[in-house]
Image (cartoon, rainbow, N blue to C red; front, side):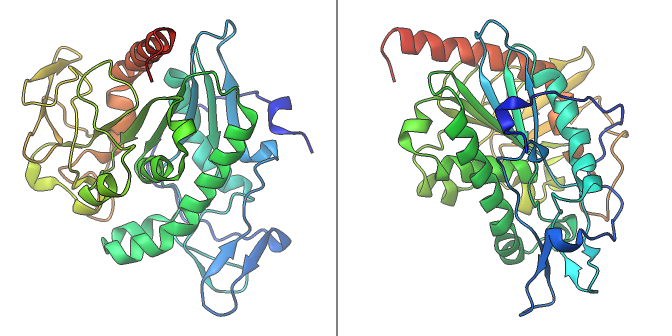
Length: 333
């Protein structure tokens, strides 16, 4: 078995991102386990010392960039295991499930990786059916396993990385939830290494901020140790509370937290709602992202989050990384 740092080759897949793949009725035999006390099938846990569990890219030859830890969103529906029970999770030992996650990860790497070192783990993310229930209790209960995987991957990543380098964590949708959980999970020592956390297409709640003093809302373009959070809708009436009922947000086009409008790609107006903390866009249909089960992309444009603002995010990674370095040179925390 190769160890993670012996293998960093990234293969870019030519597929376009879609939030949800087709359901996969496939099992890995001995690579999965069954909880016999219930009807739920639990796939085997990832082994993060195995390079199979990662997509990585080292695109920082001169060492001037940051380490980026990216958490992928939701790609699987519930599926039927070989014993006939239902599985609510992706199976990281299933090559097809990894390929699905790899579509998004590789596309994110095209703009996040240049000038940086990029790391993205596969994890047993909670299938979309759980999210479609829009039941907070169900979501909270089932995502504990998924968040545990991400925390385990992050701990392994920290054990191998150079702690003097700046750190960025980012995630989309369920991956954004993982970013919030990582801020709660990390130590103060790790937090001192943090340039910023990017919660793309997910919420930060008052309860989250009360539980973790490390969750501080970004106020501008270059503050560090902060959390960037945004969600995109065509009108505030389309906010999905389980995803986007957030207590703060920022406009990633002009990096304002008020209603000052910004123009993206010459024709798209992006305005932050100070009341709801979400981005309201006009001049953009989002038609590339089809509605799914009357849950997402139905007035919200959830599936656009990592892509519509990708150029803004790429620039901002650099701006905040340089600000972090200046602060360290000046002896500021």
